[in-house]
Length: 297
Image 1 (cartoon, helix red, strand yellow):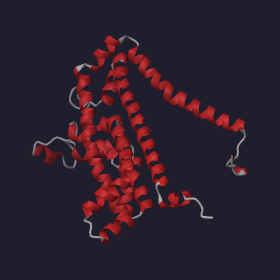
Image 2 (tube, rainbow, N blue to C red):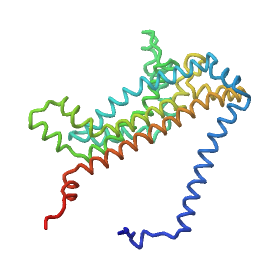
Image 3 (cartoon, helix red, strand yellow):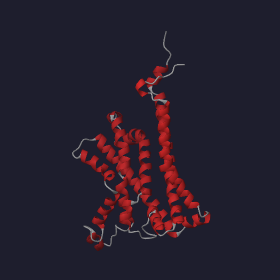
Image 4 (cartoon, rainbow, N blue to C red):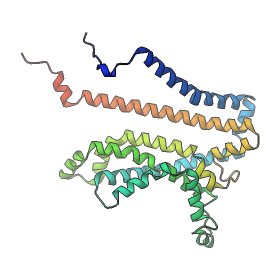
């Protein structure tokens, strides 16, 4: 049996490999597994009845509904923006292209607190548009629209940033070939572009949705912390903790932790499905089929 030998400069001593593995597992245990375990231990420390009462409290249920609503509304908008931005950047040449790329990365570098303050400055009662909004009886800040805007600001780069590198690497040859054959733009997108980017699209959507449900900074600034109206799950956890209702606070936090774990599971399944698709495509490629043919004597 032939064995694949690694180049000498890529071989490491066994002791170094074990040390790196132990360090990695130690960090994961200390900064990931242990905090999650503490959350669930504290949430269930006073029994199931206290836990159930905490998560079925009217304010908690309102926070859960609002969190799910914001995630449900922001996700399709992020999908629309992500696909449009990635398509325009990778398929067209236009003035301001580099500026658009910079703006997409802006939420990664701007503090969420600053983003929330910007919305207060724009839409607050003393903001630039405050007088207009009051005259037309419109409320954005300290209401659900402000929470949605803040959430969109911090989440919209995720899908675009997953799609842009992939679409640049794939190129546009298949789409141009379909165009020369008379295919319409919608058919090209549905039959060629979308199948090629579907897993990156799903992966970006998972990340954006997870960030939407767990956002705190920007939402905290624009929400007003109104119980039963503008508190998301993260804000409700903070209020309960500040009021020394530790069991209830950790109970709601455990729901966020469960959502995070579920997101990781879905992410893992998507990545595994993507790898399986790549392996299957490689096995059925013409080059692989040609290589698998027996040599003619």
